Amino acid sequence: MSHQADEWDELNFMLGQEAFKQDNGGSQQGLEQRDGTTLSSGFQQKLQNSESNHTSSVIEIRPDLQREQRKGVPEVIFGETKAIGQIITMARNILEETGRAVISRVQPEAVEALRESFQAYTVRFREPAHAVVIYRPDYVRRSTGGLVGVISAGTSDIPVAEEAALIAEEMGCDVTCIYDVGVAGLHRLLEPLRSLLAREVDAIIVAAGMDGALPSVVAGLVPVPVIGLPTSVGYGLGGKGVAALLSMLQTCAPGLSVVNIDNGIGAGITAAMIANRVARARKHQSP
Image (cartoon, rainbow, N blue to C red):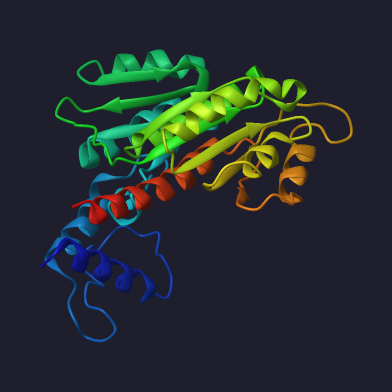
């Protein structure tokens, strides 16, 4: 049976359940669906493996190991609020299944622990984004042909912009970054933006705090989708990203979509999904 059929079996199974049960016992039960049909052997094995292998002795851990196959988006471990042991356990489970683990918002003390725990792996620490990517030795990063641009208004916006760039790269895109070209000195934007458009990027992420004006400016100039990324850089009545978020949502510039404050992962995923879709269309059109 094809992988696509397995995916539909999985979805049909999940939607057919009255509730997700906490009990991990009896993994063979419930494999027959309500309509009497039997799930594919591939999904049965995935379900059994998930129940037996992807839990912690203290807290149940259930990473979405099929997300990249289903959506083209890797599972990302949010490291900021997790204990180091949880992060390591989740990373091991993901590495075993997919060959790569992406961890965002990693605390400094967790970086060395990850390097120590995964000495046989390639551990990439992207310091500005506070993110770690771990690769199994046999993992090969793929290129989709998608082209993404990332722009930041100021240097204080770079950590969130780098988070967006990282996830777009991990989704196979070629990413070009332009930093510190905000509206306080708008003349700085023109030449870098011209160079970015010359690369024929498929989508552009614009990170900005304070008044959040730069995404509207860019969206009014470029012929590609723009993802507004408000950052919690600012002060006063609309500080911590609130004014930036509202300004981007209130824009009159067409073609601007907005993610939540400091949501670099969401911005990177959205831009990469657009770019990868466009890249596939280009391949189909080429002679």
